Length: 302
Image 1 (cartoon, helix red, strand yellow):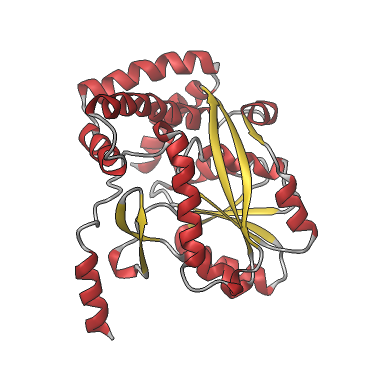
Image 2: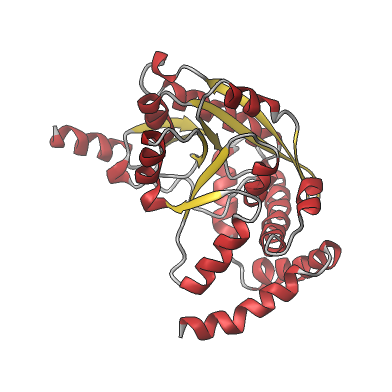
């Protein structure tokens, strides 16, 4: 059955991926109308997230922002489809880096790097980074249950030199690379909500008290990695520019969660500049009322 699904769906994806972007955006506009105006996919979630993140905005401003996000969100889907057959020249044109010398300088100094960022702009196209960075680039991804799609997507994401591993194996593979002395850059987007049972820390983020991932800080301190943030700005439809900002090269000098707080402050600052290009379809603040419950569970476990 999985092979049949792949055989029926993948040819359509491939045909779409070879179309010019201007045609894909026409199709994107059509699907935006169907998905959000007819089906109503997560419209309430998007509006609720925006209202909670920006309580100062009027209903009209929230409505306008959600409409802009809807267009961007469907564009992301079709840009991801395009990535199956995108050329080296095209990805270098559409996804640029302002100061990749920040990465290359750290690499020349022998530092391994955790590259952290958020679901802002188009994070999917960052698989072109190895074309610019003088260091092995490595990232975690969520494994797809269909092995045929899994193979096709992995081939697409690694064609420019990126290496990837399923999320569940990431820490093990990282440790192996460290033991073997393989200098690497590890991409960890850290703005999603962790499972409550795995939560170590809560912080203020976009006007809400939320559980946050602390893995990048823990790994950086354990292995003495540099931490660099990548911020992606949308220039215009289909064009993005990323900029690197060093958070620290000496993570062990920071108190617990201080690095995480610094990352969250940087992330929020960039979201506020282009809020329509942040990923609002997830229930981003679903645990906001469970902080006291989490504290009690922690006390009982001690």
